[in-house]
Length: 527
Image 1 (cartoon, rainbow, N blue to C red):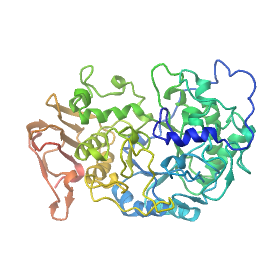
Image 2 (cartoon, rainbow, N blue to C red):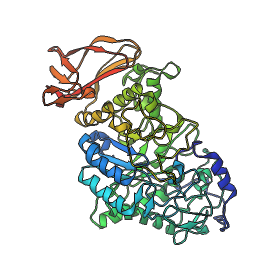
Image 3 (cartoon, rainbow, N blue to C red):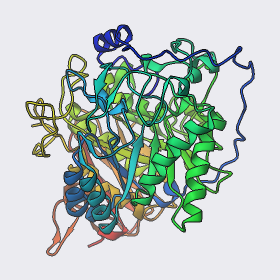
Image 4 (cartoon, helix red, strand yellow):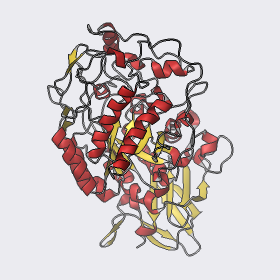
């Protein structure tokens, strides 16, 4: 739940504000919020995922049983490090059964959500781990639900906006106010985002309830957590929650979970990703942070306002360079990067509708070394008119089994797209791990929409986003020989399943790429 998400069902939220139920309203917490809020040191330890060349996939709104099967059949064999799953806790049931209901908790029970039952969740975690795939849970801990109120959750729990029997009552929430001013940290962290009741994480009892939920998932084998709306939780209070989870894991001889936090930034705002760098450090953990600015890469591939892919040169001139410094990005070893996530896909930026252009952008994202990439795998919807649409569901709004579209081009409304299965994406996952630890070298471009580069002596990629066939001779540091192009199939028992790329004795490659074409080779694809 990042800042500025008009993609929620706006009308429903307006009704929710008016229908707060008959429960008590939280009393003011006392006095004015401090002008200076407690800060957290920015010292951090890298998670190591960027350096290792890891990639994870977000199977947005998938059922637990389908995630388990995908781990075994696709994710494990393809080399994905982890799978992010939708929030497993009991959630509200909205009249339209839109996707936002998963981000509106009713309880921390995982007995039943739109993705399945507790038993199915436990089996999924076990099967994915056996397939070599970690499970990351999307954890919604900043707030509860506001719509409908009163209501009954997905597992049968009755609630009102500020009353959740056996879990929270009115005194566990901040006094109602609305997030309106991102220049004011107190407003951002202590008021209600989209009128959702804001948990008072300044209370030890609230922190313990949240930590208990996360610990219970960790004990089931969940390896990591995305903290939704982390920017809306005070840094020191969030660190207190993560510390309980980390210290419990250590005491029980389990691995400390991997954390990544949803924190956006903007000019003039009171809070930035850097304010959250130190989360989990004191308890021995590591917490990466979502780098929303990276999404702008999509504009280079779509040609928005005359932008082009040659502007991704890591050593280019001002305005034509991609680097952490040039783009104002956080350090590479701290960033979770993506071309789209479940929020930003509703901004109608680059996505499956761009078909081959989307493939090329993913090839570049997975070929360059910055950050820990996340690949969104979602379902087809009309953007922006259908932004609230939930996943493919039955007449009662319960999620249907995954049946993937045969390609990005053929995905139709209400169908699972399964972007991660596309060969241009799936086959680049192992490329990224193969070239880990190397820099971008041998950069070449035509000054417009064709680029080529090596990853040291371990791999090579060329992309032609232009409208004409690219014929050019470029250099690479990859050893001379014949290589099988990963994007058209890689190696096979008979040699190459698709195109052959030849590196001449002098280190040159004669490229002949069609419009919107690409090739990728690495040392494992040498014939």
